Length: 459
Image (cartoon, rainbow, N blue to C red; front, side):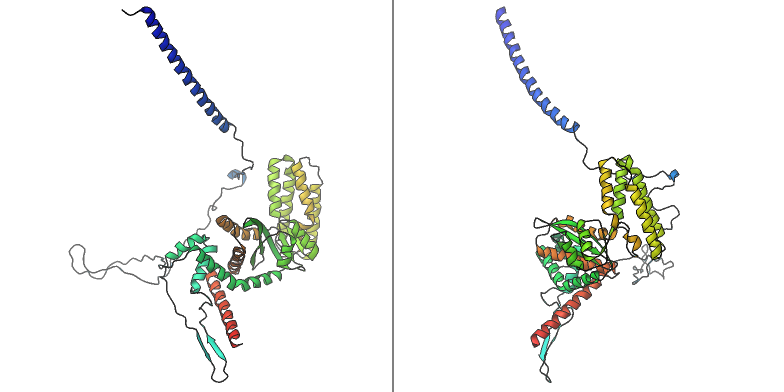
């Protein structure tokens, strides 16, 4: 027989142990709950990004706008059917059912197909360099084929293709080797860099000739952006004319760069975004400046979206620009251009003389005042564009290259990245085939080297 007091004591002990376990479990759950609350608070208190993402709003069709895309009724373009270079016919021998010989076909349909050839395999060429003295005068003569490189054992097409891989296809150096494998040619990244370096040195005189052409131009559009060179801050400069594009990588964005590239006494017109060094250079050399209206109108539009009091200012600036563009379409005489500039300046002064309260708007008005002498150069000077879009579009190519490579290591990379893109961009701008122009330039450079070596040998 079990004592009643003992059973009660055992039940109390069991309940006490269970209570202790429950308290421990509650403590664990409270700790876990606290962690989850803190994580939830992080998501609940996320702040919006500092930048404001602006989305283009499409006007409804009823208001006169249209959705993006080709307009209704726009004539389409179909690829023309090419003329065949080769005709290939299938086998027409025996019947597939009974095996009897077939008569001539009753129906013949044409299916023209455009095709490319497979990459040609690697070829080894042994160029003979001949030398000997003239029996009559004793002069030592040297004969070398124009496509024979002065140094190394790699042919011209390898240097051409490496340059195009890097700056037209935008391949990193590590990808140029696999691209050459389809030709049966093995190239490492350092070897590809050496190809670019040799090509750069051979064609540097062509870069100097393009620079001389830019110095003779009356209008030059320029822009700049940053790049790292071995951890230090450098600037990519671009100079664009109607027929030339020149890149330069400098450790400064001061007027010294402009003096070095354009010359201290250059008196043309500079299209720019308003960098202070442009103004300093213009005052010193006597050049003119055209500030970028695209930046001005974009900033005024964004300001009007944020502040109501900037709405009239934005509309006024757009109205000035649109009227000037329309008036200049027919290239008016100088007297009419001067009148248009005077009226536009008066209208702009009326706009900034209004009272504005928002600090952002006042700062923008101050920017307009500082650039006041340079907003209307395109009106009084024929052949000058009101925007700096040319330079910005040209600069975009090296901006993409900067995203690919991240940084330059030394002066060797700087020289490559300013020389070869300059040549390719200028040839494209002049309507030349880049591969053919590069081939011709290398041949001419090698011939000059061979002539110089021959002269040195005779001396």
